[in-house]
Image (cartoon, rainbow, N blue to C red; front, top):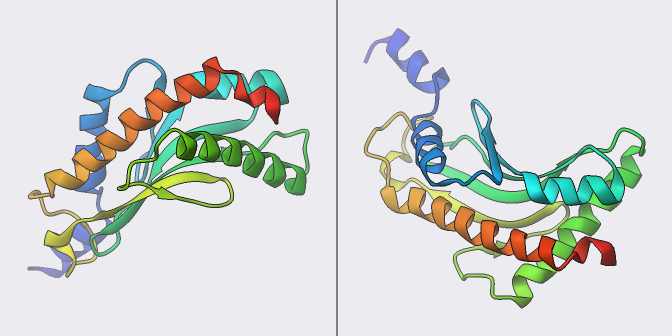
Length: 175
């Protein structure tokens, strides 16, 4: 492999992110806004609207999939960003409070074993292991493990259902 080709593989776009984005674009409903370049984000609009109505604009409930590093990545659901009128400490406290409410609701209502409980402003997460490419820097291998992409699709489906329930029960009002 030439030096230029190696640079392209390690610095080019993530095949895993691209394929996962394509799969999620086909599966996601209108509640989700898909974005990101080197990582992948799916923002849940109804939950964002609920939080905005209660606390102000700025916080973003989102699925975030990081770019794999040597075949490993983490897909997490988090409360990100900040409300401009609050200072950093207030933003952190509010993000964590909302995340804790969402986390509790999901755990009480049956968190699947493949998803892990998280802390701070991360609600839940799942680890992605692309075993076929652990020996290289990036994931340009096109034989990506379909089971890991299915795990992310299951993560999305679980969250879509639970977030709609959380919103309908207006649990944000108990914060």
